[in-house]
View 1: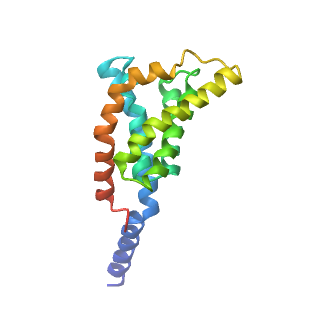
View 2: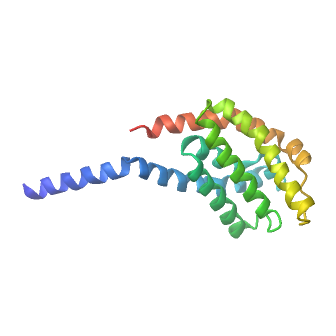
View 3: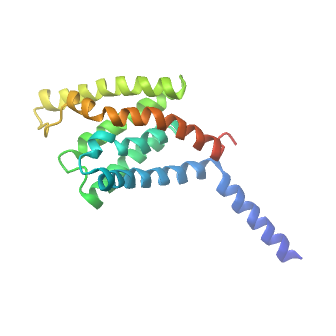
Length: 188
């Protein structure tokens, strides 16, 4: 009888630990980091090597993390996705890696902050516009003021090429984030 009671108590403790807010954040961040690594590979295999610049698949996991878990989680997803992807696939290439890190961290933090004040669609639209402006300012600072190489990065060109990805994100990311929030019940 005592063994059954101990077993039930252990199961209850395990269930409580797995359903805790902190565990949900950690597991969600790890899963979204994995998605941030896998999704670009899937796009590259299905749509070709240039599909990353067009569909911005690495952004998707970061943006979902920002809407669901906030700035810290989405920044971790950004950094881990970019670095792990580079180590596993050499994409983004080494020259582009720091710029990609900066871009994704800008979006992670900005969307997380704005999402606390506005609904996810408004925060997302503002993040797309202000995030690109801020990223452009960073590029200007790095390339023009510090005279570091740009490696062919053009803000205007990246926006033009990335319009399908931005549209895809606008349609999917807030909806997916809402479903995840509802499914994992973070407010518990």
